Image (cartoon, rainbow, N blue to C red; front, top):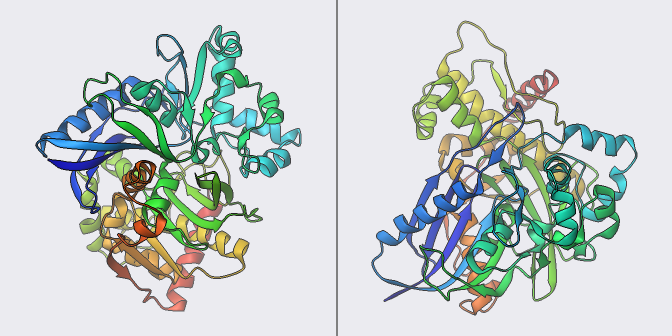
Length: 488
């Protein structure tokens, strides 16, 4: 009977279940999408039972391809800042989850900034005051759902990000790990615990918060789920971007990766000391193993693959996301057009929640192929902004960038990314690095891998993209992008 680790990768638009053997071969994988809800402009919500059903369906599909297997451990990775409260006794959410993209707390974040509060939040959490993070979402739920605050103070309702809720559903434990906790605005990344001063500022009762655990180690065993056997250890946990950093074996200080999913996220390992950013980056926790914390610098572009979905679903320019590369290849450039995909504001390093997307430079000669190319270039240029900020904080150029996520399959875009960064970009053999990171952490948690070096030895390169664009051409692209940003 084949022995496997199960990784549950719970994302913004779908859930993936991946089965990995001890030799880091993907035995089976399946993905199931679920709906997002948009009750008002800028508001984004999930029904978490839609999420649960998508995981169940993905698991059943993945297992149907394998025959009988023995599950050694389960790892969980998740969209990070998406937040909810649920009843401790029934498991019923008090409201739909507020998704990381949700902007309803923009005004409150501005109030905190105007009151001079951002410095203390940044010093303790490494984050800026932005509706992206969980803290103001939690406050909104407690302020706007009748009776919620009183129940939270008694511990009758529980707070969590999606990792916390899934662990609760799988084994009844109310926990989270430092990578997810560090995205809440009320976790102190220096002490490794919830911060009473910040909880007071946001008026979040400590009684409703989960226990902090290491990223690897057995927390509990599966109960009655309906789609997994009982008694399987749940032993790996990480927010999706930290999980991808781990799955890319970026264990050395200075190692960096970019994940192109719904958004694009660049993380760089900064070792055992947090690096405070002067250029709009976030200081965050990568992972904590055996009580020892590894930190990271992070830059986030909120819209990447979501821009391609928009071309497909709203404009009908393509009928499937995979068509965009072939369409973009039919033209040599974007025809002078630029696309800044700021549908939910601008992230790193601009942090402008009020920005909105724009397509500019249009003439009658601009075709849907030019728009497709401008979309790919717009995503890549957001990553340039992030990495330039990262290089300024570090005072040194980036040596190489590891690539993963769905859009990294797009060779045209990855070559353009290498060209405009003037950096070697490397794509691994296993692109599901977010799920892979969760599997590695779960395996560490039950002793399948002895240490990080054993994981590094399994990492295999699939393709390398080397910069070939002239300095002059690169400068033209940067100037055109900066011009487009002024219009946002």
